[in-house]
Image (tube, rainbow, N blue to C red; front, side, top):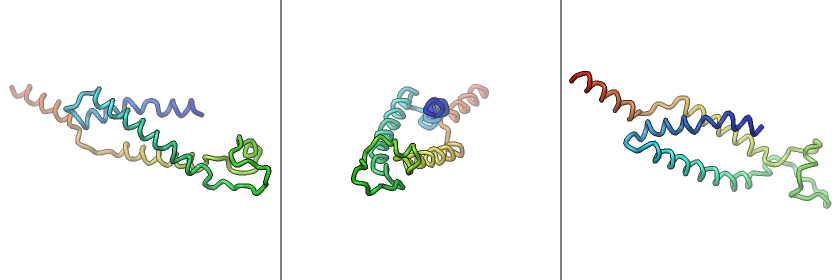
Length: 126
């Protein structure tokens, strides 16, 4: 599953970089890419503690004295309950869906495109 996720999400970085370059035209592509990478890394670092906090949301804990709270999840594989991080998984699906809708319907001012069109008009008028 991680291979499928990486195959689907991998092409997003070049697309996001180009969109960022279009929006922040006077900045160079390298500057936009560095800012994008820093933001992505910082955001993913913030999700780790968040997902750790919501790890057991919806997971039923047993009152058995022999059961370990932080086991390897073997009992969940056998069907005795919902595995940890299930809520985090659904939260990531929701975040990806909202992000996809936002970027698919994005209607911003493309500064680089407008500058290229203005330059072409100036070249044609001379």
